[in-house]
Image 1: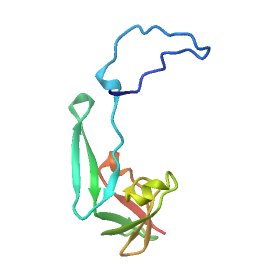
Image 2 (image 1 turned 180 degrees about the vertical axis):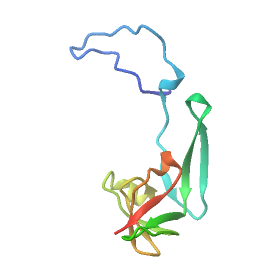
Image 3 (image 1 turned 120 degrees about the horizontal axis):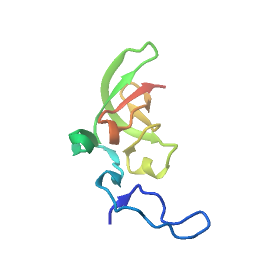
Length: 125
């Protein structure tokens, strides 16, 4: 079954709302992309509205790290340390925005959305 981003079919009072039109392809939602820590990088390109494309990272092993001065270095990911969004994602090595990961340079906080932006970037803690 498809995940939809439509309004609810019920009013706040519990009564039924009758839809004036059918579902549209643009209102379909995608399943969450759980970007994992892996030895090899895997990406998926998805066609979206208007013929454009979104790049989703399914597995990553490198990260672009910005230090305090703003210098960006590409380094290897070692481990996921903590994730304030969901502690269960740490056990599965899932990378999301806000997660703290261990790299060769030290601990880094993820500032990008790897499942939607197609890049893994962060800042040094």
